[in-house]
Length: 390
Image 1: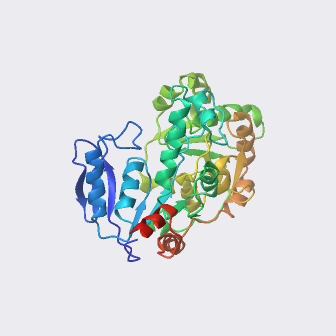
Image 2: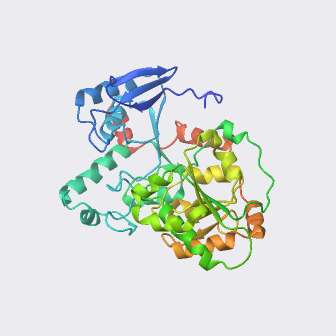
Image 3: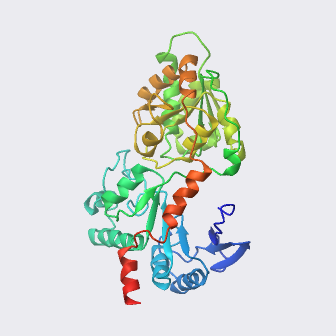
């Protein structure tokens, strides 16, 4: 952005016991969140909220671009919009925290059933202690904060559709996240069928990421595939075996049966992700929740490595079956095992690797930002009322 003469005045969430705002680097400040509500969506301390509003309102900027409402506060954002009616307000939405109390996952708290839409009654089944009135008020407060935005940027069409269905205004655009100049400068590999039998998972093994599904699928492969060839291998980047067993203790016999067919490679540096992805045949994204626009998918495309993903949400949108990857039925180890068996053929891997498309480039990304920042863009009705009053 700086190279394009877009000079950001940025803030980052910090940790207590910092003052509410403190300098960090040139053009950057840290914001403490210790006086916010437990969900980090509102401020408990009105004085700290007002101090942050005063600081931000005093910046000599024309555009306020938020990359979250979490750890900033919907109430703070609404106050800032009122304090700076002359400025243009933009927000990039990365997840569905405003819509769903369950960490924004839109998945039931009991079991693994997905939610396709939001309503207070549906939410009550997961959070009975909240009460209908509290759930209705929560949605109203969230909508009020987001309605202050003049332009909303969504990282996927799926995410945009969820917010529109929820009741948010239709003033926005879909813009893929940018990986950065350094990653885009790396040369693209020559497509080949090499390492078709090597599959990889990247990321932390949370309850929603589906690593347990992938491990069970790997355990089914010896039964599913009786053809000769290299033994399928799974590399897990981002976790140790102990991390997985703490989260999924019932996987112990599965891991024992897999033996050397699975390697836990531990943590990795973000700068190493492209070479690591190029060392495998396929990157697997087996999440059991919707996902919106997983960075791992962009990184795999940048690496020229085809993908195997769950057939829902942003994963299904970002990976086109038959072109740059394969889909499998979400939360189905059996279906994933069949997909892994098919993908392990070198001819299949070569075909898909040849058609993996690169990620959004710098110029296209900056053009998308320019559209969102344009002062001629339609103003939020709330902001129009402010201008009429002033």
